[in-house]
Image (tube, rainbow, N blue to C red; front, side):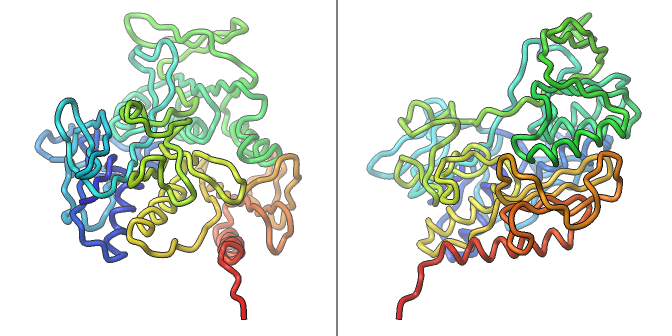
Length: 407
């Protein structure tokens, strides 16, 4: 038997890949949420524009409302234990067990795939009504309801989640402010030039951005958020506050097992942890990256899928799938931003098409490194050209990782 801890995209992808690889063992899922696996990227985008019916208590994990987020596939071939949060992991002679309290939640198993994801960081004042983090479908339901009646929205954190929610809140007619600790939001991920372009989108949309700013308090009245006070004394009116200041990998439940932890479950390049037969994928995994020689926790849809496929084929005893460069995207203010590869620090991108001028509205295609074989590509509203260059990078990356044949 194989146990998957976490009813998530990464977990379900691993299970599907196991089946595609010829593995016929029973596969059991242990999931803390009551939903079957669903797609999370829309939670900060289209989902927030929807009106939700009351949840059906008899839906048994299959009715996420009007969102259509459930991931299709052969879910009926797996054994589901939903609404069960694991709180222990142990290895014995008969296999690996996932525990809940004093009982074995499921197991013992021959292999365990951990896909428990991460939880959002919070601030003092997060217990007030109107203060949200966004990680789950239930979080999105609650935030969507508040945004429909919000007049003033404050986003604490100017990363992708904050930017996407700001875009949605403006579309719904709210006044929006972003509070960001760094001077240029996203520069560490996108590079300074691209980050400045994304910052200009906020200005064009009428969103006020307070950079280099710290939050002193989230203030409320009658149990509901009313304002946010910054470190320099400025007060921002707010009837909805969204805290988007990063995440914490969900590892506490396995801390007493002795498994190696360091900002996530530490794994090798094939997803195996320090505990033999236990693998980790997705937002909770801090995996070794041969390209950089470091362990990295990547929190993107594409990374979750790629890691899951690698782990499944490792368990099945097959060669790993072709290597792919890191890829992620963000939808903001009617534009789709796509990024792949490793953006080098301090390098100015070459713009191959369009314009990165702050007032430009037509999008662009830019590369880092050689224009024909770049190290990274950033595109806005250039999906075809982006895909062509992404495939070029992927082919070169996979070729470099394959053993050289000798005559």
